[in-house]
Amino acid sequence: MNANSTFDTIALAGELDIARRDEVRQALRIDGPGSGILVDFSEVVYADSTVIAQLLRFYNDAGELKRRVAVLIVAPQLIRLLQYAGLSEIFPLFTERSAALNYLSEVGDKS
Amino acid sequence: MASELRIKHVATVECAKLLRHALSSFLNVLDMDPTSRDDIVTAAGEALVNALEHAYTGQELGTVELYAQENGSEGVSIIVSDNGSFIVRDHTPGRGFGLPIVHAIAKTVSIETDKGTRVKMMFDAPNRTPSVQIVNEGDTSGNV
Image (cartoon, rainbow over all chains, first blue to last red; front, side, top):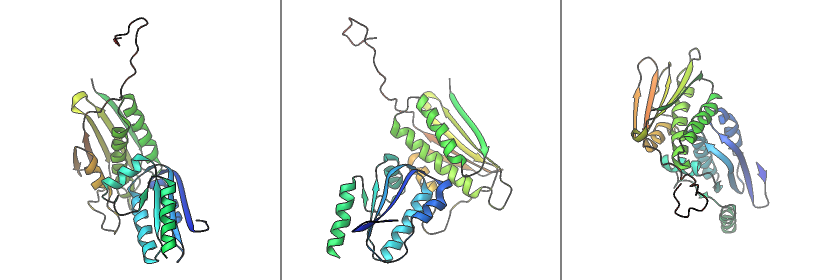
């Protein structure tokens, strides 16, 4: 997790599938309370449902710690995967970095 | 005449990527539009995850097979099969998305669990990507 002045960033890239499940689990980990978190999947070109499960766990963990999360995704495959899983309305999803950062900044201003 | 792809591989988690890429290349040869191609690869990927994650739990590692067939107007059929055990549903919270995703994408899905697991998915005939028209020199009609 890379610290930023106002939020933390977790970035993963490439194809996130069952072979990388442990790596994704390690990356999507929250140590404690803190600022908002940008989950940067802008370089992810493919994901399967094992990633969805990890993302859902991460999002729930963040919620329990009152940490806001913005998920940046660009790949159409990943966007549709979340839609097919019925989860596209669950996560704060953004296809543009500026919008995701604005969302986290607004959250930070309110807190 | 039907176009076919058949790959059998030891059921290691690393083979999922290999099989997906092979399927994607096969669908590219059929000039399938990227959205349909990616959706079919996604559905096949979920069937593969199910096989690789559950089929050989607690037993000797076997193989997984991916079979794809394109048959004109009948569409594309994909079969993912293994010789292991089938898990109907993962009751762990936050899991069990795989088969619902397959059902959301495929036109029909059938699962046979005799002597292993065989997931057969049918997809609509592919939308072809527009091919480039070559206009003969001096011919402005657009006909080749």
